[in-house]
Image (cartoon, rainbow, N blue to C red; front, side, top):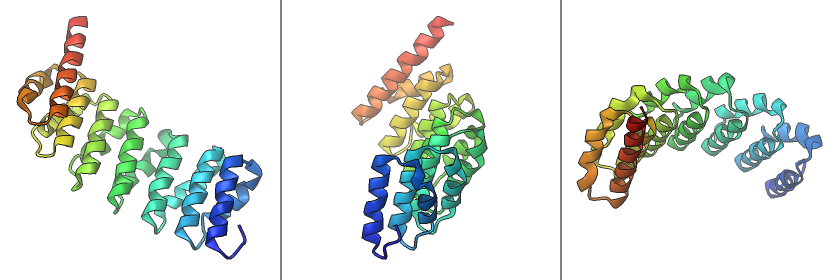
Length: 212
């Protein structure tokens, strides 16, 4: 990792990742400050593979990296240590200037199983990029965010088919009877995947209603 050629440093990092050698931890942390963004990215990935709790703070620092790919991968790497203490970091990443970082943050927040992530995800529904909206919708469904039901119903009429489908699936996970009529209206949707998602959601809500 002390070689001047970034290609060599990259190769060494890949090799260290395959061997999962914890003794390399100090050098991996040092590589997070490498002048090459590619090297910093690989160092983040390798630290994530080691799963050492000592890696959390160095990885958190990479959330402010100048390179958006390093920041994005750092969000995913910290997902291995997901917990309430990291919620503020993921929430800030959801407001990152790069939309791909915001996408990753939305996905990770959905995996957190923390209801305290719901307000930030609801705010992300207003993101200018539909890709971020889609993952925020999916995560709200994963978290069973009943409070977001009305907002998700609005997305059933969105012009982007992926958003209509994601909303239907999320509403099926939330299982609010309020969504039944709007979901039924999708029976004539021009996109077959949207229609299938709506049908599955209606079935899921129906099963819950019968069980009660």
